[in-house]
Amino acid sequence: MSTLPDEPPPDISIRWDEGRISEWYGALAAVPRSTLTQSFGYAHAMMTVERWKPRLGLVERDGATVGMVMVLQKRLLRLVRVTRIHRAPLLVPEADDLRTRAAVYRLLRLKYPSGPTRWTSIIPELPAGPESETLLRWAGWRRQPGPGYRTIWLDLEPDEAALRKGLDQKWRNALSKAERSGLTVEIDRSGETLPWLLDRYNTDRAERQYRGASAKLLTRLRTALHKDGDVLVMRALDGSEPIAGMLFLGHGRAATYQVGWSGPRGRETNAHHLLLWRAMLELKSRGRTRLDLGGLTPKAEGVNRFKRGLGGEEVELAGVWS
Image (cartoon, rainbow, N blue to C red; front, side, top):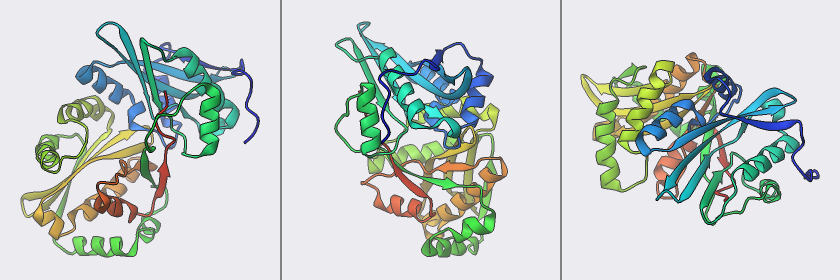
């Protein structure tokens, strides 16, 4: 690892709460692997549902915008200020180098220290490993126990034939079976059918006791994102009966697979394979170039195998720091 600077270079800074919304959207769109938690719609939903106040920062180098970071804050009992930075900062590829990265994390540490009345945590959008840990410790952050967030990223830029060839053989066979099953795929670009999906998602989450975003937060996300064309609900219909559904949320040039549900008939026909494949093509046609498959968890190895079968790049982030 190259030598880290003693202090953040003076040509790198973060401009807080001064930019226009159009600048924020532009910065997000300039990052190929943007994250949902750094989108303006996510900030709006978290403010409305959970009373987190967002602060928006534009990273500048030599006066040019080269990245962005959204910070969420709230006060507990009017005494403690809690600060969360989730899967950020994000830097454009040409500025995603050690010098800039280190400076931005140091500036964030100086702006948001931790102490008895200030609780700050960050999930950095950095890969797990000694290089990231060295950088974060140099910047003043302390590692918290626990594994880092793991997910799979799909590159949607190849053509349809190349995307299909990249699928695992078993996944491709399951997709072929679904395509022969006579199912109809319904594409909802406004989220009107989201209540139907959330009803089933809530029941499934309660029965299987897994963690996930609340239905209220997902509804607010739909409200905040649909006007920008960032909501996609896919449903598989057996005749007129919906038997499976998926929700995708867009952010910049990327999107996240957020929610999936399948009933017995959906599982029998491999409806989820068909829905995810058709969603990939739909997202690609709308200019999305990357798809975040929404995380991996040790408690759902069947779901993990399903996601790995798409042939994307599996990544692990550097964990939680404070």
